[in-house]
Amino acid sequence: MTQPMTLTDRAALTRHRARARRLPGHDEALFLHRLALADLQERLEEVNRRFTAPAVVTGFPEIFTELARMVAPDDDLIALEPDAHDLVVHAMSLHWANDPIGQLVQCRRALRPDGLCLVVLPGGRSLQELRASLAEAETTVTGGLSPRVLPMGEIRDLGALMQRAGFALPVADSLVQTVEYRTFPALLSDLRAAGETNALAGRLRHFTRRAVMAEAARIYERSYSTSEGRLKATAELVFLTGWSPHESQQQPLRPGSARARLADALGVPEKPLPKDG
Image (tube, rainbow, N blue to C red):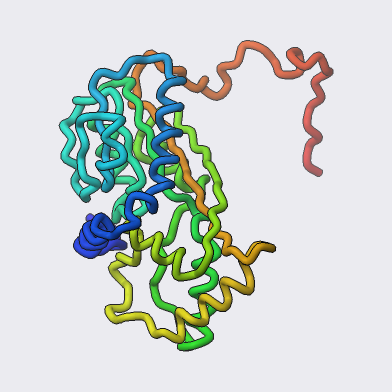
């Protein structure tokens, strides 16, 4: 059996999150998490259902306990009982998963039939300016590249994960925000205070050279400054929705089972396709 690739150093991620909680700017740095929480609450209000056994999977229980009393850490093995919940929310943690499909499968198994799963995580456009600046700076200074910023999935690929994990009626959409910072160090401080610094398993195990960071700051300021001199940073939140399969849900028709012709519905004559040759 093929083992999933180890993307994240979970011990390092745990240390970074613990350090972040001790930093003075921690509460303010979680503004995206609060934005995600508000959007999740709006989505749940639009669902015509009362959930009686919700659960949340997250590395940030201080934010998302508003959604459920049952909160499970985003460990590789999620501590949720099978068929125990009618709602599972995976909040702002899936991007660090070594096996994201495995995480979603565990969420589906924790759901009762026709239970709802909501997922929110940073999408592929997040920190695109920082990734580009660091890559150009490191190439310029050292002549090579090292793993520095977590790779994040595009919305189309993330949406496909729900289907691969066995969810019915999967939907993916996103929310893009532009955040502005006074300086490059202020951006890095925000990431540190949010617990989102480099915890990649393949990262270099020594401090980044000052010349690399100075060059990255210069590139960032040159390429991504506003007219007022502030630095732009893109933040994308991707929301994934899926249901645990149940016979009452809408099902796609079998190919060839249609009882009416499309041409009749459109009121146009039907023309056969021309034969080859």
